[in-house]
Structure formats: C-alpha cells, structure tokens
Amino acid sequence: MRPSAVLLAVALAALLAPGAGLPVGRRGPRNKLLLVSFDGFRWDYDQDVETPNLDTMALDGVKARYMTPAFVTMTSPCHFTLVTGKYVENHGVVHNMFYDTATDMKLPYYTTLGLRKWWDNGSIPIWITAQRQGLRTGSFFYPGGNVTYQGTAVTLSRKEGILHDYKNEKEWRANVDTVMRWFTDEGLDLVTLYFGEPDSTGHRYGPDSQQRKDMVMQVDRTVGYLRDSIRRSGLESSLNLIVTSDHGMTTVNKKASDPVELRKITNFTFEDIQFYLLDYGPNGMLLPKEGKLEAVYEALKDAHPKLHVYKKESFPKSFHYANNPRITPLLMYSDPGYVIHGKVNLQSNNGEHGFDNGDISMKTIFRAVGPSFRRGLEVEPFESVHVYELLCKLLDIVPEANDGALSTLLPTLTPEATSTPSPTPQAGTSGVPGTLSTPGTARSTSHVTSAGGRTGPARLPGGCPALTTGMLLATVLLAQAA
Ligand SMILES: *[C@@H]1O[C@H](CO)[C@@H](O)[C@H](O)[C@H]1NC(C)=O
Ligand SMILES: *[C@@H]1O[C@H](CO)[C@@H](O)[C@H](O)[C@H]1NC(C)=O
Ligand SMILES: *[C@@H]1O[C@H](CO)[C@@H](O)[C@H](O)[C@H]1NC(C)=O
Ligand SMILES: [Zn+2]
Image (cartoon, rainbow, N blue to C red; front, side, top):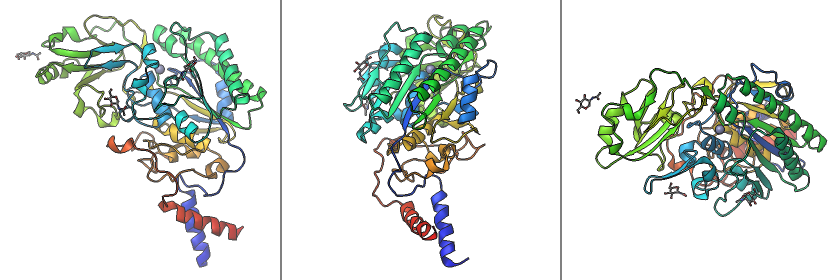
C-alpha cells in the first residue's frame, strides 16, 4: 500500500468506529421522530396472537428480539430511562409513587404524574434538551411529560384525566390524529405518545388471558392506523417511528401456598418500622426506626425463599437502582409469581411487573421504521438505557450525559443516517463507549459504577475530542480519493 492508502485505511477505520461521524453540516431537513409506548407490552405478546401490522412494521424496519428494561420494572422509572438514557438510580424517578420518608407522605401514581418535584430531580428528558437546541416537541400522556424541568415545559402537552379510560380504541385514534396535526400544523419535531395498554388488561386478567390477547390485537390495529396516518399526512419519508414499551408482565400465583406476607414473618414487627412502601407488586422499601436496622434486616433476610431483602449498599450493582438518596436503607423484591404483602393483603392483580429485569417475563418490545432505519433487520436484545442516544442521533441533537452508548443501536440505521454528522463527540459523553454494539452481547457489560459523574451536562462540541482529528483527516483523504 502507498502511504496515502494506509492513511486512508486508518482514517476510514476511525470513521467507521462506533459513534463516529463526518464533521460536516447536516444534509437536508431534519427528520421528525415519534416515540410511541404501549405500556406493559411483553416482548412475546405477538407470538400467540395475529399481529399483521406489527409484522409488516418489522419487515419494513427494525425489530429487537426483545429489550431489557431498567430496574425497577415499573412504569414511571422505565419511561424516564427511555427519555434520559440514565439508569433509575441516576435519574431519580425510583418509583411510580412519590414518597417522603421524613413526612411519611405517599402519593398514588396519577397524582405523582403531575408532581414536578418527583420528576425534576436533576435530569432532563429529551424533549427539554431538544427544545434548548431549537426544536419543538410534544408529549401525549407520556409519563413525566406534563411537568416542568428546570422551569421549562414541553411545547405541547396532554395529560389524561384522573378517571381516564385507557382502553378506548376510538380515543386512541383521535389521539393519533391529534399527534399527526402536531407534526403537520404545529411543526413539532418530536412527540412522545403513550397508551396505557396492554398493561391495564395484563394486570387485571393476567398475561395469559384471552383479554390480553384481544388487547394486543387492538394495539396491532392501532399500529396499522398509526402507519396509515403517517402516510396520509405525507410524513412517511420524513418521520421515524419507534414503537416500544416500559416492561413486561408475569402471572401472579394467587393460589401459592407460601405467599409473601411480611406481618407473618417471625421476629418482624411493624413496630420497628418508621416508614414503609409496600403492597406495590413485588417491590418494597423500609426505613427502620433508629437502632432497628440490624434487627429488621436479620428478621427478613432469610425469611422467605422468594423474597430478597437487602441493605441499600448491598443491593446488586447490576440493577443500577439503589445508589440514590431516595432509596431507603432496606429494600426488597420478590420472585416472579409472588407479590409482597404488608399489614394486610390488599393486592389482587392477576398480572404484575416490577420484578428482576433479567427475568424473561419482564422483557419488552422495540420496533422502529422510517427513513433512517434499515429494513427487515432483527437485532439481538439490548438494554433500554441505550434508546436515548439513538433518539438524539435521529433528531441530530447533542445528548445530555447519560448511561447509554450510541454504538449499541447505531447498526439499526441506514449507512446514510449513520454517517450524518453526530452533533457531539461520543467519546466521553457516554460512560460505556463501544459496548453492546454487536448481536449476542446485550446485557453483558454495560456498567456504570458511579452515579456522581453521570449528572453533569453533556460536553459540547468544540473541545477537540480525540476522534475529530482523525475524522478531519478522513474527510480530506476521502475528498482526495473521490
Ligand atoms: C432530588 O430529590 C431529593 C428528595 O427526594 C432532594 O433532596 C434533592 O435535592 C433533589 N435533587 C435535585 C437536583 O432536584
Ligand atoms: C399539562 O397538560 C395540559 C393539557 O392536558 C396543558 O394545558 C398543560 O399546559 C400541561 N402542563 C405542562 C407543564 O406541560
Ligand atoms: C427470633 O429472635 C430470637 C431472639 O433473638 C432468636 O433466638 C430466634 O432464632 C429468631 N427466630 C428467627 C426465625 O429468626
Ligand atoms: Zn408500565
């Protein structure tokens, strides 16, 4: 090889490295992005029901075998991970319920949806970031989309009423119509759209029920309606559509002979407890009274084979969950099939989530189609923490500091979309460059050990990152070679 050819090869290698991009201006107008979440859509819900629209979408675009949600596998924490790229311990929305151990206040899910101080805890979701970079955004029922962050609200927002009927298909279509108008008439660049199903039906009747299958067919019809609407609105060539969800669902073993009932555990007494958050599926938090932590821990730790109780500092690091000031000194979760009962047995759902995100029943879906996505590509499983970097890439905006890596999902994009300029140097902004980029490695190596470094602002371009020099060289050489 001639020296220049060697240089070209080296430069090309740099160029093709994960996260690399040409430092040139964006080609053409920015694509729009619609992120749709169907709550509690387990990864395999399309395997025992006809889902022609989801199947067509997979042929036309990208499908993940499944996606691993964040832990804790609850609605608000997992939805916020999708739009921040942070593990739950790093974004702070650690539960569906607001709670304050000092005042003993606990608020239900719906009330918490509207409570700014629960959501606005140091991390900003993608719509705020996008707006700061000149884009217009909307949230339709998306959890966390109806509060302000650092004083800023999403451009257009809709919040469901307290007695909202989450399964009304006619309303779903009206909501899709509204979102299409937001894109065409209001000039929005990004919309996050939420549907409360099939979660509600999965809870009520269980994931194996006919009712759940019927609801999955309703979701599928809605996906068809969504894609037709995109076509009718003339957005097909300029809008990327992602259909995903927050977590899966598993059947509660209501006939179990050994239910987890804290009040019946030997040597455990609520007398020792200052604050508790229990009776919420398989998850529990406890703040023992002064001097009682060891006694409570000793009483609970081996009390039930399906119950896993930890001191906060010993909670498995792989969950990326407990390293947050909001987490109580003791926390617990139970195995699939079992929920945790406190003072009385209040729980009656046939389906639950909240379990270990490594359990197959908690895995969820990820599908994407649009001008930036490859066609007919099925990718191996990955963690939901990586979706955010992809969203930022699709919108061509600079991401905040986060726990994801663009390299994970970059292979889902067309070569053209991949090589459009990355607005920020990837090295350094994501904690785990280069992980999980190839099939088969998902969920293996992504570890961010310290929460502290994850909360600062993203580095802005201009700091002369290592790759830039190589890329400039590549550009020059490519220009010469052309
Ligand atoms: C996050 O919330 C906790 C209380 O839950 C509060 O002490 C802390 O100051 C908040 N941090 C930010 C950055 O809002
Ligand atoms: C919440 O949604 C309502 C409409 O449902 C809207 O009027 C209001 O401005 C939204 N608030 C925020 C902070 O987004
Ligand atoms: C309960 O506490 C007593 C007194 O500390 C102890 O001897 C006993 O082993 C404990 N029982 C269990 C099941 O932990
Ligand atoms: Zn959910």
